[in-house]
Length: 109
Image (cartoon, rainbow, N blue to C red):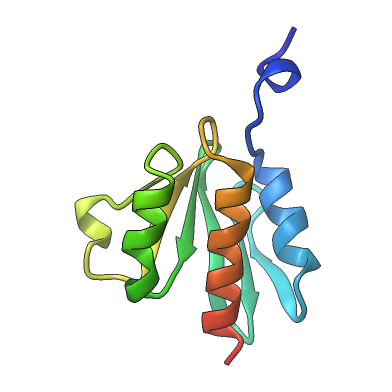
């Protein structure tokens, strides 16, 4: 039995499918490190097989972290940036979609 059979989690493919379902989002990058952009502005990018970097407005970031502390983190290198890391092996799928939605709204302006 795989983890996917008994525990909800998010795969890189899930991230890509959801991001690409949003208007004007295009996939760029490489096979191993894809990114999703709207109007050439970053929405999300796969950092490694378990981590996705997602752009979010700074004023929304703290509420995301508070609501989904197991799904997201902000490493020191990102503290001043409009970004969170989503940890796919433990992320709530709704949380990842909400963060991608925030990124899309911010970048589609």
